[in-house]
Image: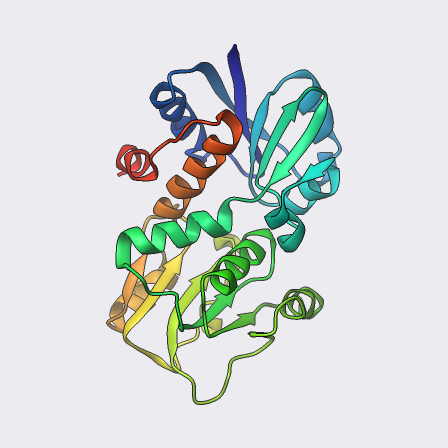
Length: 260
């Protein structure tokens, strides 16, 4: 079989997913190609059509993660919990959806910083599909608390209501052990950066990777925090995605080396 894979979302011209897919195919001993598909919310209905006609599997990026969730016919437990899908697979005419963002984020943190999630007080900026997956990963890997900061109060409440230890605002007098920015670069306000409670052991993660060092990340570098961009998360979520697609282990660390 020659696999037809790709990445869909908007914008995707900068996406490194096709590069990862091609390396992953080689590591898995498979043949195939990977293509970028520029697809915004106005054309989200094309997802199902594309999967029926042009693709065997797709990576899904913003702003389509909820749309992919809504169009999937069979969902993984994680996708149901997060109401977000970043991985689509067509098998025997059935469209399957999964979310590997949360577990990929946790694996990336472990690889870079060791066990920093258990009992941590975390802050997540944003309340979209990526934030939902990150929050789920943090909760299921032992974070003590997660506070969500975002402009859309309805989404914040929906997300915080799913878990007992997730809150719609920061907890007073608690340190910030981990802060994660999931907001697209174009929609950011630096004044919203959370610095109260930050300390020299705080880990600050910007899940974007273009630019590699964002203005937001620089704030935390200057504050003496340990910081990371989104390349590791991209690689480790892709390794889980490919394992789900192909049933073959693909090493996230090897994928990350390709991106450095």
